[in-house]
Image (cartoon, rainbow, N blue to C red; front, top):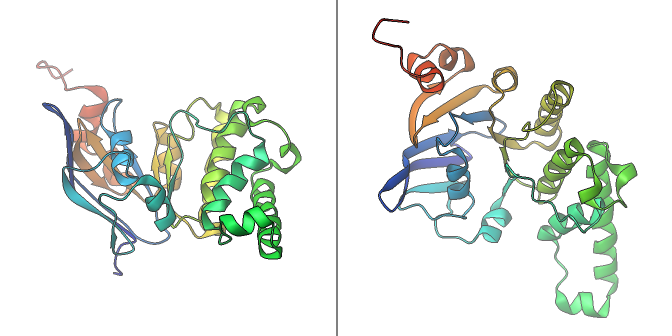
Length: 260
């Protein structure tokens, strides 16, 4: 098998005496769609924060395409090809839908400050290309007709889709989705699962997903890693994980002494 695109080995982080993540490892190959699941408070978002530079691991390594990311600031990790969405939506609420995506597209811009100040032909051409790219992304997410609206005025489901579109504006190799189905109704979740599948194939992006909706996870993911209290308790195909006694216990609690 080829080398993993995202190679995470032995990540550990403690806050004081509390072990938030212990010896976490994961290999994500190009084109894969994997899920990271676990009960509330298991440490899933903490792992995303370790991967994206919000926290620095006290032990272990994060490599993307063979490049060590440990210690890099968040913007350099984004530039290296890792983008994320958040459990709590973090759009620029006072900016338009289009500008939210344009800002992300600027990560790959080449024209410098000097060109921008003088509005050189190269800068003008690049700005036009960025606008075109952003509108194309909004078209994919059925948001093009709302490009001029303030993002905070969008319905909840549209805000979720806009956040994914913005992440894709950075041209990521790996896309981290933190509970994208949170707060969605059943119809919106069906549309979201179709959208994630579309994004994966259309943009050639590799996806790691945190999600509580098990039906969605089982439907679209090839591999699932389960953590509880920061410790990996299972990893495998949806079928393997679904029947794992440790996973059942973590979600439902330990069986009683009477066997009930």
